[in-house]
Amino acid sequence: MNYIDWIILSATLLFIVIYGTLKSKGSKNVEEYILADQNTNWWTVGLSVMATQASAITFLSTPGQAFHDGLGFVQFYFGLPLAMIVISIAFIPVYHRLKVYTAYEFLENRFDLKTRTLAAVIFLIQRSVGTGLTIYAPSIILSSILGWNLTYITVTIGLLIIIYTYFGGTKALNVTQKQQAFVIMLGMVVTFLLIIYKFPTEITFNNAMDIASINGKMDILNFSVDPSEKYTVWSGITGGFFLMLAYFGTDQSQVGRYLSGKSIKETQMGLIMNGALKVPMQFFILLVGVMVFIFFQFNKSPLHFNPNNTRMIQQSEYKNQYHNLEHELDVVLEEKNEITLLYSGQLNQDYDNPILEEKMISLNEREREIRKEASELIKKADPKAETNDKDYVFIYFILNYLPHGLIGLLLAVIFSAAMSSSASGLYAIASASAMDLYRSYVKNKSDEQYLKVTKYSVIFWGVICILTACVINLFENLIQLVNIIGSIFYGTVLGIFLVALFIKYVKANAVFWTGFFVQIAVIVIFLLDVVGYLWLNLIGTLGVMLLSTIVQFIINSNKTTNS
Image 1 (cartoon, rainbow, N blue to C red):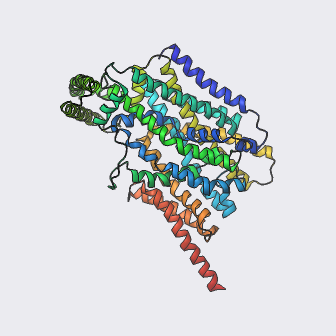
Image 2: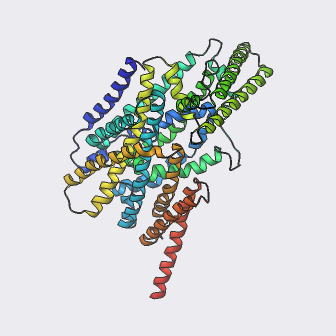
């Protein structure tokens, strides 16, 4: 990075923070601070919801995912549009009719205060750790690549978030997320166009797509029913549907974004917008990763993209073996360059050469084998090393092959995404603790007092999230940790909400005690490692729905017997 990158990065982030703070400063009451006076138009709701879900890791990991595995990951989001429709029909009218501040306030209206408190506490545990992760994940990658102090990056992101969230409330989030969404998409589009511009003159965009297809990067749809397949149409529609239903329908970090909508119709339109644009957006980000893969057919790439692992093995007893693998890879990449250019030239003459296709496939397979051998060597040198380097592919490309100025813009994209998702998480935690805990139990206080508590909660939870991000390096495999935490808690909360909406037979005591013990059971099942953690979502949801119905039947039977 040079001074141009620093100017663009700093100016972009400062503009977002200052503009958002000034534009929305001066909330006079709790309703304005939390719900933005319910005066948000539909497209702002849609952008805010999209920006909240799109964390920094999305723009670091997703292109790397496509670089290694192609476009198939987009199937993970196939259930999202259906979830948006269900939430628009079933959840939004109820939330708006009851004029709730948080999703969990609805549970008190439907059941009682203790059920609301249970759901809120589960959310606070899950989301506080999750928000710490959304701060830490980009920090660790930027620290590794740029050599910046990890703690300084983490604290900087956290403090910027606290500032504009504290002063502006929901209006600040909505305003800044519009700016952040613009910066993010501008950066990705410019990067996409620049990659294509940097292709050799023989490589057209159509040729690039053909080459990607030959290398298995364009396989989008997988209709396999094999449960061991990671991404399929069926798992995306079913598993993705329930995950998105839980996240968008019951997680206050998302619910808080659309509770500020002007009306039920405006809010529904915002969510439908998110459902319509999310899959294409993810497809485009994956396509950027595929174009990075094509770019590296003609440009040198490292044997392993994580610089921490590279530095470590260079100082180990395996460094000579690692150097030999680097030499092998250079030979393969040079041959790939020649074959790919030759094949592309023949495509330009409308000639499809199957011999060259087979040669490209063979060379690509050999490249994967060499990279796998390198990962195994790194594991030998340090058994605790994380050898999955997908998160580092895109940032390596940015720093080594993009012009100065655009580097600063792309880093601003990463920081903006980190700030957007983390701010929504922080604000949701503060709102839930102030409204669902303090306001529920400390009655008859002034509106000004509740506003102060909400603002102080932003600072308190902001510090907690920063501290969580600073100590979370005690864990390995961050992405898996995010999924594990969500799977442990989301199922139970979703089950409680689905009972509240669709099983009117079940009353407060049945759902509270069922939810409490199902949550404990899910944690025990996870600790015993009985099933894969993704199944915990289904176990929690169905467990609450089925058992609460049974418990309510027993309660009713006992009442009948006693009477």
